[in-house]
Length: 65
Image (cartoon, rainbow, N blue to C red; front, side):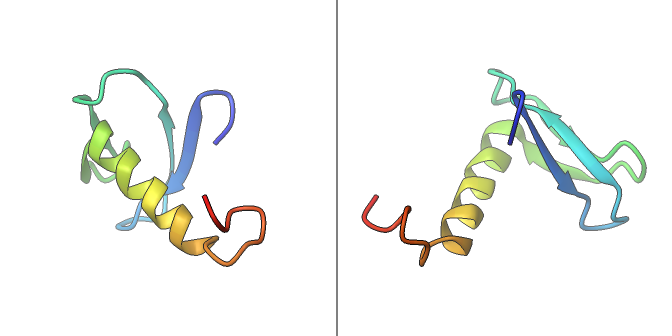
């Protein structure tokens, strides 16, 4: 996550999604190529944070947080 954007890959068509880290948690996250909806930004943001926390849970600089 940099410059207020999160970059991820669509799970359906592997297109890179660049999602602005906007304040409106109700805006939809949609793949520009296949149209797959991934949910509202607030829900997607929560899922991404949980996935990152799980992925790096054994990293020493994250432990204990």
